[in-house]
Image (tube, rainbow, N blue to C red; front, top):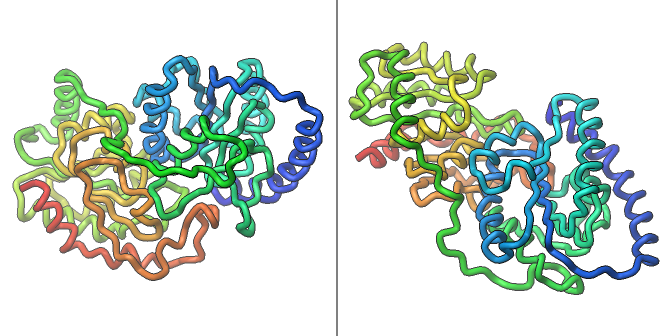
Length: 403
């Protein structure tokens, strides 16, 4: 389904449903006998955005360390299943998906998943979606002794019902990964504390799990590149360009002409290779860059890798240049140097969790214009914040990284 249609459904159907179920929930809770607070089974609901799945990974690792006997379940849209599988932080048999390609598929999968998870008798649900009514409804229908999630409290709008037993304040001045960790810490917090979480964190080595590639995987990737350019020399520097962002937020895109100019400069002034990546749907755009450069050391690799193969590519490359999107977060699982371009979003919340990341951000007064508070929907039609990041400055950062 198109993102805007999903927003409309979430608002116009989600709000009244959340309101009705909240009334039912309040009545049932009044007569319900208090149950023992067990935490044997915990379900994470994180439906969309692969980058958020990467940011959630350290929190799941923390949970497994501090509650080793807890069985962890994960519910998501099928489109992000691959990154969760590749990270390997949750047992594959405990992964549940909903297809979002069409409204009918989403409805049928929702009914199926709710039935399956109700039978699991989940003890705690952690809904980390930022003010999504759909995820809130799922948490109510699946049922658990405790439901933890972000609450709007006294903010206008973004209503998602009153199903939560532990309400966490979303802190837009802290990284999204720390907000997720606050939800995990809320498991052991009192229901009477409002808002949660009333404590601070000391975070060391708060990174997603490293994903290495064995020599065989690296060699296979090199051979695939050589099928496109037989003269490819793996000892030279490899710079990867990811020119696109997801359909969720096209405003995050740096202009294609800038990527073309950057690729030309890298080919002209270095001896390395430029590899352009993207999905099959983005091949039209990557071909524009490839045709503009017109050199065999520029390789169009869009639509030619699985997610695991993309990580293998990061493990043999030196630098990734990308808009704020999923790929720089995937790259955080490796040691590649990451240069990420921010505009309508803030790096304060969404910088990839890597030791080797460089952020480029114009920091306009109107930025961030998309956030959890407006359903990532901006009024902007001209992303000057991205256009303000110059090719010259990005080129300098790349040279610094490969030096």
